[in-house]
Picture 1 (cartoon, rainbow, N blue to C red):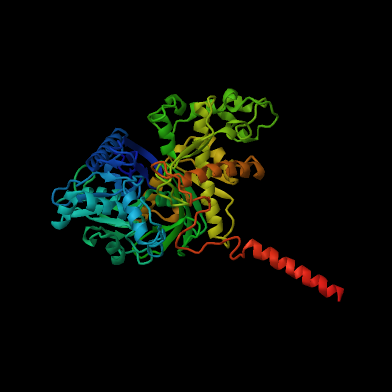
Picture 2: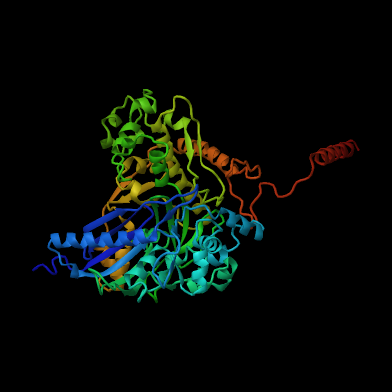
Length: 610
């Protein structure tokens, strides 16, 4: 083979999510993807609210992705020896425990959206007198079923094999990155048990200031600290591949997927912001070295730490568990025709859906000379450029159906674990496309909620007028991107890349190996962006949002089991451990007010007569 350095240094990235895992090989000099292989992961859901993945299947899938990608490089006459480092980015919070003596998981990996821990969370809230932010000062996180600590507690309480492994000192905990790293570096023989600060910050066990495991937190949850991995920065050498086609290659970066996306889109300065849309949605706002304590339902998290001695950057984050998950639910559970989503093997194919949503029979077919909504996406469908029909923004498709996909309860900004999802406005004439549209609308409005919370938390920061976005469900979905621009009222910028998280992990690995710099990456590796401008006015946008918020209010008062919680009557979430503003702080009874007013008037009249 004569083309050893044809593309220069190569960097491999392992990306493990809750729907797939994949391996990409980049040319470091310009971030060109030379090969990629992806394997779909199968969710295990034995009971309502349960979401698991087989840890052994995840590891075998990673090996398959690497093997196929290496074969592809050979076919392309590219030497795999040019791969100088690997990076790992992963879906955060997914929790796995395994036995270090056997190398096998003692239980399936529990996904972040799993709600089996609701009863444990209820006990903890009772213990803390419903103070949902009881640990927020130390962790940056509200108490929630989402984060790893409560999942570990459930495993200890309910799985005998976990307790046995802890007693034998062979139990290890990790998020998906730790599990992959441990296996890559030798497993039972020599596996490195470590994680990075971004993943550790999602466990509810790491102190967000010290960046170390906090004994007060581990004691609070009853979790032995000996099972926890070592915490490192996002960009340093963790260990070396122990066997296989990439033996000896260093693993030089680990990052949670959302933080990797922030880095991959070069949101490295305080005030930069990005939003990712995958199974769920996540909005991250870089706050620099400042940890901002949100009063409006956002969480504080580590954004990145690019080296052992580098400064730690923090972020405010709004998260919703259901975005792409809601679309998958419509397709798989409600059996809305799969052709509406294009190729059902890929969540990114929406061309047929866009066509159906543009159909005048679906959106009402009301004559109009206005076509503002589709001004930026007229290439999607010939019907769009026909001024005889109103845009979906102004027709009855938007007025009939609202959807709140709270399948796993509410995360930001309400953090109400026992809320339920609601579809409102159904009639016998409701079409499936309208429900799909309402799902897209909900995704956009969840983003607006994050932005409004952020504006209230950061009043002294410059206003946000544009938003960088990425993720599977927007990678080729201009319809949804335009909808987000319209309903959030700001410019949307989508980089022309399919994997912002992988770009971030690649950059972090390149920095660790000293073959990349931020300036080089900015000059040669940042892709061009597609821009979507808002095309409707504030009055219409606010009216639509107000209508959706009425359905949100219903979701907040309806708990699992069909019970209605009459106390939760406001869509402005009240953090039980904080003093919240009241329109009227103090008042007197009405009868006393009337009597005293009459007395004052009478005395005044007497004084005037004198």
